[in-house]
Image (tube, rainbow, N blue to C red):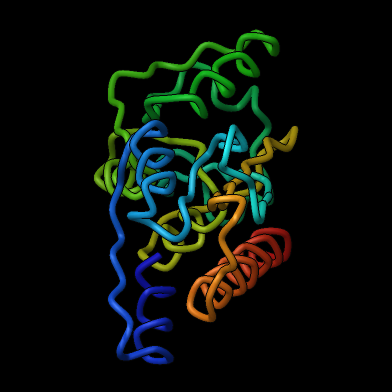
Length: 194
């Protein structure tokens, strides 16, 4: 998001941009109260006067340091996570991942958790273990010297953009959605080809 905000500021220097992290309910409330043009969540908010205006889906990746997976590895099988120290996320995504791990008979040693993908990446870089994150975070993790590998089986991650159903999105909001689409596609291609 910082790169997208930078892009938006350059293209629309007179527009005030606010990037805040809130709970699912707070996002819904801010969009409903027209305190935000668009809300981004990991859960669909198409309820009542709110509608999903875009979805961005990519497969998650496994992040680590070379201590846990060599950079030369081509992918990580979900069973490779068994018994390794794991940095977990709080919330819906982690519950979905836990269900997949359980279905595959995999137990991880989740002794550390964080609420943001960026924080998870930082903890992994500091040697706290391995994690599964969205591909955008995975790309940044690799840029910072970490190992980022595709996860098999694939674990999709979707970001939903929500707005009021009666709102006509302005240029800045439409540009934000285009930037998110491009960043998601770039991360998807980046992960598949490296």
